[in-house]
Image 1: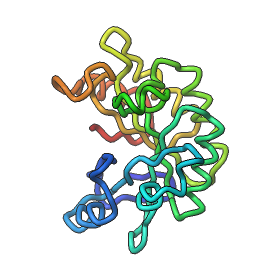
Image 2: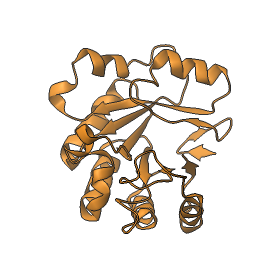
Image 3: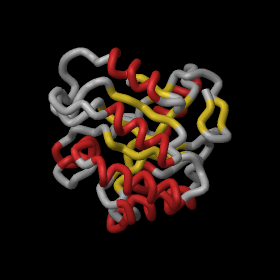
Image 4: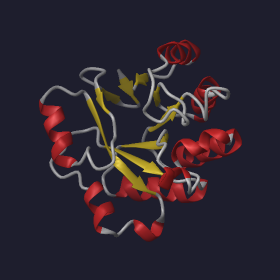
Length: 200
C-alpha cells in the first residue's frame, strides 16, 4: 500500500484512538508487525497546542517514517494551520478526523459531526491539502445516520481534493460503536475510488 511517497510494509494499520495510541503503544504495535500507525487525535485549537496533552501526543522521538498525526476540528483555516504546525514538529502525514462520534468532539462540529455538512467537508479538505506538502489522509464513517449514509460521496470529494488515503469506520455516527460494521458500504467505497482504503 502506498500513501504519497511512503510504501507501507503491509496494509495493517493501527487506528488512532484517544488515550490509547500514544508513542510507546505505537512503537509496540510496529514491533509486532503493524505496517502503519497514527497518533492520537490532536486538537486544531491553537489555544491547546502547548498543553501537556498536545505536546505528549505530538512527540515522535525514535519513531520511523512515516510519522502520521491525526488532527480534529471544524474550521478549515484552523485545521490548515494545525496541519502546518504539526508538520513543523515532524509529522510526515496529516490525517483529518471525521470519524469520532464523541459528544465533546461532535459538539464543537468536529469528528463525525462534519459528515452532516458536505460543503464544509470539501472546504476543510481543500484548505489542509493546499497548506502542507505532505500527504493528507482522511478518517470517516459511513454517514451521519442510517438514513443518511454519504460515505461514498465524501470519498469522491476526498479524492477530488487530493487526499492520499482514506480510512472508513463501517458505522454511522449515530451507531457509535454498536452493531456490526457495514462491510458492503466499505466495499462500495473501495470500488468508487482509486484511493488506498483502510477498513476499520
